[in-house]
Figure 1 (cartoon, rainbow, N blue to C red):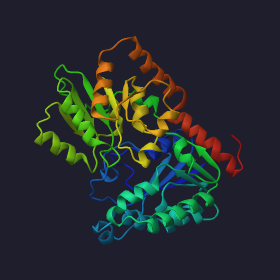
Figure 2: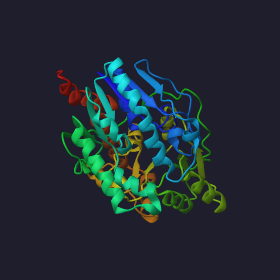
Figure 3: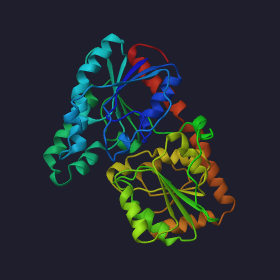
Figure 4: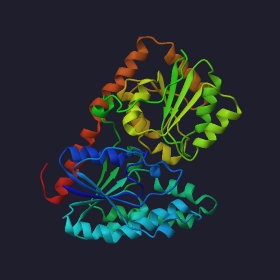
Length: 387
């Protein structure tokens, strides 16, 4: 297959998304991928914080030309505006590529790409990867209103109706989807998870203490205050936080002003270093703010933790009822999270059994190779091809 993917961020950025993992795995299977991306942008968003990373011979990344003045202009609703502007500007480029390169599949994933869903002569696959209406409400902030949510919902429904196939990241999100719906979860590359990092990682200053770690984007859907409060409540452990985002500064400021000396903030790191940091952790945290977008998510970090045979303490999320088979510990409050961490650190055969159960489930169901093969098996018949 030849797959065209308009991406509303920089492809080689700190944020290694679902689409990087899925499309790299599809490229490994012999499919050709074309990625459209906007120009660079100075932004606190991890999607625009670029790093040096290796490409793939079957993935071709193309910049879409935009007005530099308009692209760099800061304005209210800046994030929404830039997504919409890029999508409008990329439409013509996409149509040309579809004809010139004989693209088979157009992979879309968000409401600003509405116009793309009407392009003829290509099979549209819509990936419903987040609760976009809940995300829109957050981005609109004070001007969030029922009319905006209704309009966005209608556009989202139309995109699904126009698509040959709708994929959802979770079983919970699938209940809201329309059309030819299939659940395509997140996962992990076990091959990548087993590699040594290409460069040394930052020193972890654990000083003989057990290490409790968090990996992820410091955004509104992560309960960053709970993370900091747990670190403050456990001075006998070292807390290692890996990642960046719009709420990273809030965490750094709290750690400094409250003198939380056992909290180490590494910042954003290339994805090929992520697993080296996880190996430093004795306990991993899958902590979220309880919002619709969180309950309907399938956290990539969970499978990355499990790939390293690490015990995980998680917020109770609706989708985890479809994933957890008894291997997770839970913590919705500071006290409950601390209790779960201490129970793990106390050790015993039950801890090892639960950790191994989580690894075996990940290996059998949640690898990107398996997920990419499922994607191809769903989409190729739509093109008139067999499995």
